[in-house]
Length: 238
Image (cartoon, rainbow, N blue to C red; front, side):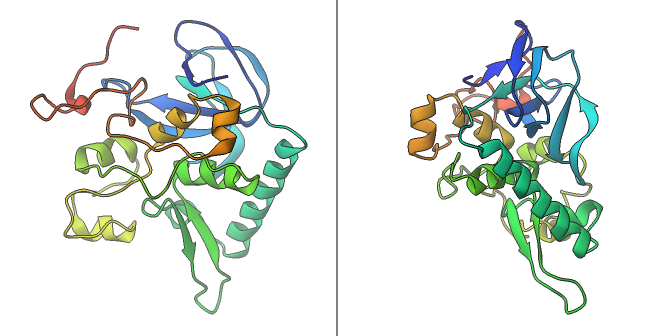
């Protein structure tokens, strides 16, 4: 299923399809993604489903969430079972390190190796996008080219990380890997992952998607320096 909106037409969502939520009042800015925890028929943006995601904390389908967009690459040859193994491993790492809440979380890079402090073992921290990308990397599918990430400013960060307080503070940003003195950062936004799935299965498996400015929104918003930022524009009618 190429990436699509779930607002108008009920759709089938399979286990480990990528699903995302759009920020209210924006032109389709995808602020959070995860993986469907189940096979579901007739999914719309008004029907909550179980998802596996990095909130934080990591959740393996413990709650119900309404999602606005979804996309997939058909899994084959036990790839879904391999993703189960990946999440088992992440859960073990976090538990062994007694990592809870924000200590599980990262922004830049979207998957961060947390070194051992001598008392607890090393483990990985993830953004919501990082968790999804790492799960697919585990089965040999690179969804997004991590070397070609557009830079975004604070407006995008505030939308993408509403639960991270104090992003205006350079010291707070630094805790999440965002350099203090920079005004824009190459952050792996959830929309890029959704757009990576707007391709055929052969294209997805052949190579990673190169995101462009505007792909933080679904559908893509064309950017023009002479106009206001797409993040400031009202949502189009559904």
